[in-house]
Length: 337
Ligand SMILES: Nc1ncnc2c1ncn2[C@@H]1O[C@H](COP(=O)(O)OP(=O)(O)OP(=O)(O)O)[C@@H](O)[C@H]1O
Ligand SMILES: [Mg+2]
Image 1 (tube, rainbow, N blue to C red):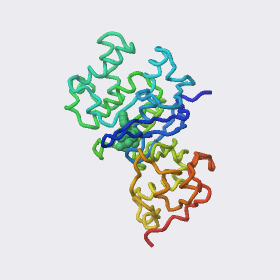
Image 2: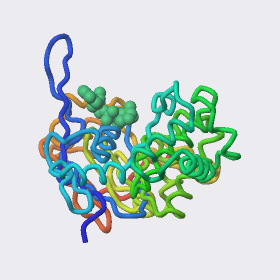
Image 3: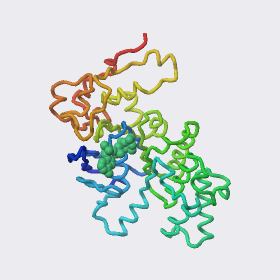
Image 4: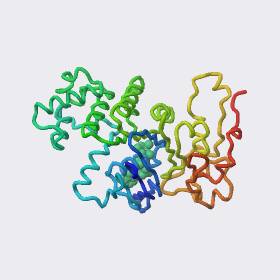
């Protein structure tokens, strides 16, 4: 059986210019990832590591420079028009900036009714009205009549994000890529938006790819799902959230985890820190040779400087590190005594 969505050796290389000099930006390099119906995958990485580019590739907004994207076993970029249209409505993107994503001159009813009428989900204004009300109720904007005639600027960030979620589910998608959907939402409302995604996943069977730089929300939303860790355009660790967070192998993920605050003071006291050699992320347009993490990694040796590690199985999870087998957790330095 084919996966719902599959990336085969996908790279995206942008052209950049600094001081008039052309250079390449490898935003995604040889990424292999697949997504199945109904699952939640969190994609985590620092700013600029290629998360949004990956999200755009998955939703057909960015054509890979190299490699293939398959939807239900069919190569997306050699689909006919009807197949491509079905794929595009089945894989939806929810963007970070809900204000930019909605037309400021259109009411919520206009923004939500246009795609369902265009895609013949419903026929006529009355049916569109009923469907839009149902969508608003599903995303917990109630009573829906209160929102129909509002403009985007009259809603809060959290409410706009719910409208985007309503628009994304209106075409009965199989998968939603949510790119930092809560980073611009008030902190107090973030959990409720994450809970809404979990509800849509559970009740409607929609698969989610949750893109974030924040491990804590990734762990929250994908507790029964998978985690993919990205570093400078590459996936460096991939596995079930349970496994990967209980026994992180890639030193980059270990470092990210030590940066997550621990609420329990007893646990915090014994918390360990990975002493990175440098806190600075190298430029993605001039990545280090060998393993891209080597200039920051406390375990790096000559091999790491010379040879790019492959993403290989270690236990049930995939890790791209020459020393994945040798790095036991106890090597981390204990902080407070
Ligand atoms: N259209 C483009 N043209 C040129 N360079 C681009 C383009 N889109 C992205 N980039 C570059 O590709 C790299 C990866 O960008 P991307 O937006 O995918 O990262 P990100 O992980 O989503 O970052 P953030 O966490 O800040 O959203 C960056 O260096 C970015 O400047
Ligand atoms: Mg981004």
